[in-house]
Image (cartoon, rainbow, N blue to C red; front, side):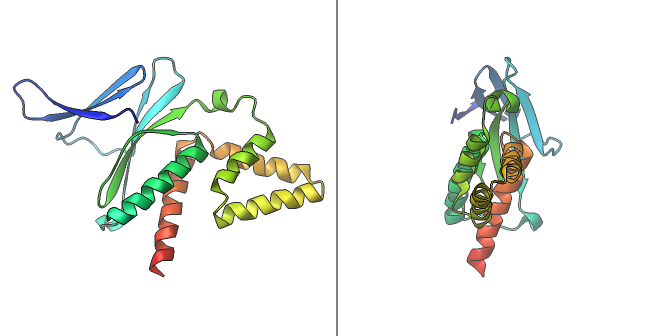
Length: 185
């Protein structure tokens, strides 16, 4: 994590948040009401990565994140980051929403030279989940009966999910809410 700091402007009581990023500096006024947007994007000067400030709120403004839930979400976030290839520069979990500052590397550059097996190996990072176990058992079945096309299709499905901000957010929230629902039942 790069970190955050707070600074006050000369003669002004407004707080300005500053994130120091590689080859980039992102500032925002924490108190001025800004139009709500799903994300804000910044690209580093080399064009190799994009940086996104992502906010996600709980439906109905309910309070979802207590201390225990925040810790569970932090662990799940780390696992999802490992799988997806994205990097968290900063994060903040609040009672009913969270903020993430994410680095999204250029997908094609990152995946250059990957083989089908590399994609299947990446899938192993989520191996404790039922849906992933099912996919991995399909891979073994396809290997057993020589179905290379089936293996290729699964590897391509994994490839589409890597270095993709939309897939990352969708999977992160689905995994968290499924776990929460399982705890409540």
